[in-house]
Image (spheres, rainbow over the protein chains, first blue to last red):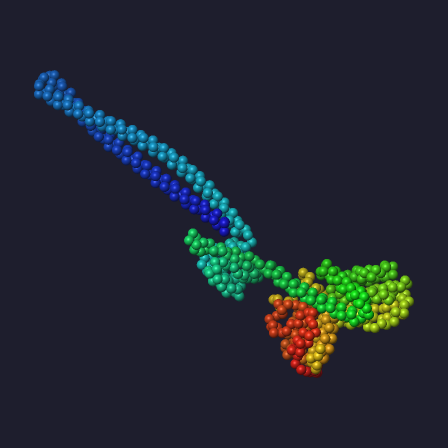
Length: 479
Length: 126
């Protein structure tokens, strides 16, 4: 909320500056009044001086007349009148002198007052100019700050708004209008509820009721996008703006589109459950393979070697599947890898077939089948003696609407008597029972003179792993 | 371990080794098994011929969690329990009362759960 403080400060500052200028103006006016008073005093004094000067003039004239008549008539009574007039004139002159002196003092005072007033005026002008410049600077800063704020508010991807009381909007950002198609004016009061999903309106209202008590507004609701009519989830938060007394003046809110995030969270939840399922399933399978291996092993060493080999084959499949999820497993690569794992020399094996990619399930079963055949060949068959050879060939064919894979493993040049059928083992069960059960196909393992012959047929069905990122989510329990 | 004599139990589980283990444990306890079946269609086809006393079904038959078979069992009034590696969160609310056996399961828990779910009976033709 520091942006708000930045905005409030210059405003307060400007108000303060305005007050100050007002005070200066009042002071200036008071000074002007004082000067006017002085001017008035001087006017009055001038009036008095003028009147006295007139009186003096009159007295002088009278005196002059009296003097001339005295010369012509030389009357004693005239002399007395002349003395009286002289006396009167002296008195008048004295008064005039006093008045002049008074006026001189007043004039001096007026000059001092005028000087002081001029000085005050100059200082006042200077300060007003300075304050005006300051005010202009602050105004410019405020305008810039407001522009920045506006750019920020209107530039962020959130839908920003202002509200009062319990969610009555007073302003909606252009983003809100762009997203919902609702004008700022129509969003006012509770108008903003209109684009909110009808099922989420009660939630939104309840959140406002809570916000009053908690002083914080946060909730998720869906908002209709005008462009395509789709409702998208938004997380909405608002913070109250307090005045100096702590009263909530308004709320500033922002709604963030969290639709994609929610979808990803759902997806993540599905993947987590799927992973959990896979891990538990795999553990159960490992347990079962261990117990089957135990049943068909004569010694502990035998058991350990077989179990290790089977778990390694299982691990190789998982590695291939997780390295390139969705890509499937290349059949030829897989067969070669399993033979390589048995250190079979290239010259004695012949691997060929069309380009086939296996689904995770088919890859898992077939990898283990090839592993069993290769292990058996090394121990008892074509890869054990010096003359034997192994040919692995496959092809695909259409059967109805499905493509079937036919894979044949054929050993030759085996001299050993060990080609006689042995007791039902892990490999036999895998090929003859598990292939039909899990792959809906057929599997046959024969111990013939000259070596083993195995044929596996099953339909190639797309069985994408749900763990791959683009696999459809068919998890109704998570809806 | 005994305790399931005379019960017919439908087993639907797509993992061969797990199906085999279930079959073995339940048969040892005296039950008759309908199945095991790796796919829903095969289970439904078998149910058209025989009615089990209860069913143990995997939630994921190869294509993610799926509850169509569970819904069908509810429709037919066959008690069942889930055999799954999934958490309870994946199970829809409507099956909240259905018992969930978590993989891997030990024999005692399996047999006790099957006993609780089953009513007495044989795999009989409809």
